[in-house]
Length: 398
Image (tube, rainbow, N blue to C red; front, side, top):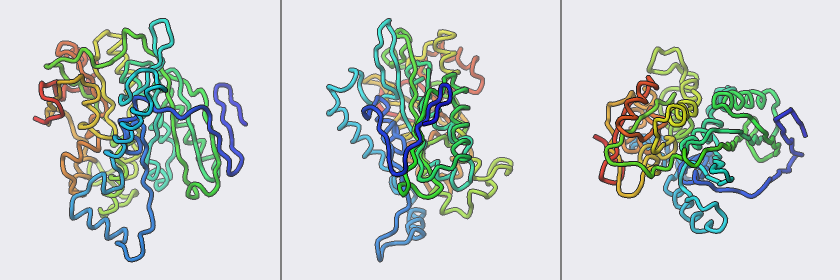
């Protein structure tokens, strides 16, 4: 057992794991049915084809001809959503009374305040880190996936915990991962309170590891972002993403596989100075400071908030809306990042599939009144109004 002031990590004996507390499912469970559909994690790994079955190259060629999808790449968002529905039925007596399916879990602590929790991983983005050999930013992704979730409820992150599991501990590599976690905590104004390192020989491929993270924040009941005040005509304020973030990598990796590029190839867009690996590993943007500055600092009311992750626009935006309304998205109102255009072109991916899998250049969305939305644009120079609340349920594009 190692202890470092606020950080305590338990190094496991070979072949032994530790489970602390009960497994929890929070409101985030519905969101990332990918390696994250909040928090149903489905990570795909290569398997040996059955004798006589198609080779990986043949399967990739078939996907390329038919147009790639997330499901064909191995991630079933609908199955994750079905699991959440089953958990909802099972969990009535075990949860805090807040519905499962949002971006974080609320727990009342008295004094008109809630603790807010979120948990997540970074999915098969780890595979890119392994291939590229870069491990110092994946920890930022880990923190961002959880703190961006809980700030959708108006919560200020207090602390973060991580779980690092590997077959054989590479101290230098693990140090780089934890460095990224600390950077993510600093960027979201919370502390790294603790963590666990588990060595499990034979469980993971040599040189690989897995990560999970857990964030806890706090919010006054008066400041909870719950979507209840959303009305037809309210505006959707989009905050730009930094890249692919941490969802859709099972499909992104398949696209790269059928292209003539590798992780080390110069990206065929932009100025060509970045490799494809560097573009894909761009860390997930942290939205905590911007959202809290607007919502609790400047009192520009955020009525609803969305962290655009697994499920993209179609599955995430409706989760912050009350019954009886939907949204109309203004296509062309923001910059779709070149990586998404490239993936759609190379993978022949249908536009609807793109918007159900990736963030498409918008990593976070706030629902605000028209007046507050205009003020928010003055405060966040890179934000844009990307749509509005409409009478028809669902997500439509105009």
